[in-house]
Amino acid sequence: MRNNSYNSRRPGAQRPSFGGQRSSFGGPRRSFNNKPKTGGRTGAYIHPSKFVNKAVTPKTEVVYIANHQFADFPFSKALHANIAERNFVQPSAIQDQAIPYILEGKDVIGLANTGTGKTAAFVLPMIEHLSRQKTDMPAVLIMAPTRELAAQIDDEFRRFSRGMRLFSALCVGGMNIGYQIRDLNRRPHVVIGTPGRLKDLSNKGVLKLDQVEILVLDEADRMLDMGFLPDIRHIVGLLPKERQSLCFSATITPAIQDLINTLLIDPVTVSVRTSETSEHVEQDVIEASSKEEKIDILNKLLAEEEFDKVLIFGQTKFGVQRLADKLTQDGFPSAAIHGDKSQPQRQRALNQFKRNDVKVLVATDVAARGLDIPNVSHVINFDQPMTYEDYVHRIGRTGRGGAKGKAFTFVEPRRR
Image 1 (tube, rainbow, N blue to C red):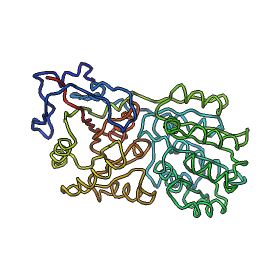
Image 2: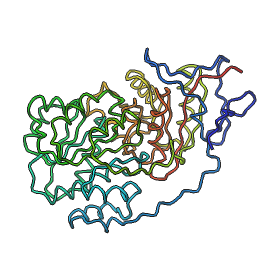
Image 3: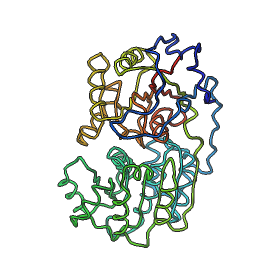
Image 4: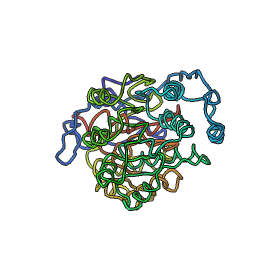
């Protein structure tokens, strides 16, 4: 149960234990200030109790009983073979409920917690559609908020469509646009990209969208948060009126609903969300009065055995890079992802973390949404997020697929 009274930090209360030993992380007694320091930007106030969910007695997981097996879906033999090769047998809730509607050609709004398989929920029926149709290309357009998520979707498409002679083009910022123009000239079946780069390519007359049959918006709420709404509307205005439209996200807001109302026709809503934050993620706060104290605490935590794959979130590009360099210098191999790195550099850092070549990945919120990074043991918010919604997505990088995870957020000390 979440500790709404914030009693883990009341005078006289014990501090949380890390690795079986009581922490002695203190600091000067000062008035509490929880507002994130964001270089002039103002984030919404988040009470510290929202960062606490100790889950001392974890709830018994409710196992989802699927209505289908993957073998039940009317996919081609080639697609079934690729699914079986990845040992996919029983679909997740979002896959089980959304795939039949998508195969029927209906517009779909898919709402699910992170780590529940949203990508496969739209990629698999999309591949089946393409395998059956003799259509002009590109026939599918997928928009995602970040380069990393777009690349992840492209990887999923390539794995599931292996040997089926279906091709994709990845069009994101931070990469050579000349290569992307070359890929588009090869007339791929699927174009996957970020709104800004897709708009650039359409303005150059390279990206032709008049034959698109399926539009997918993934993490639509994040795209609006990042200011992509004008680009999205521009791109959608180039699409045929007759099309299938799919919108997948972990959260939905009134602004997103307004967008959906203009894009989708009589959509089916599939919602399998269970809670704001994963009930598998134990959450707590750590008090620190300075960056130096935070780093000292981080060193103590990372030295403990249970902190074996740690994702740390910071607010600024400079701060993230500096922290990664400092942790590496202190003996904890770290990589960094932020907006000043090129896409190949960002992908290389992500791959190092996935392969366990580095123990720590330090990132801005570019890594908070949609990325599927296996076996992250801990998420640490070195800097607090701008909004609680961002917090939900940050800690969603751990505790994925029913696994347990832990998340800690640094806060300033309260007045004693």
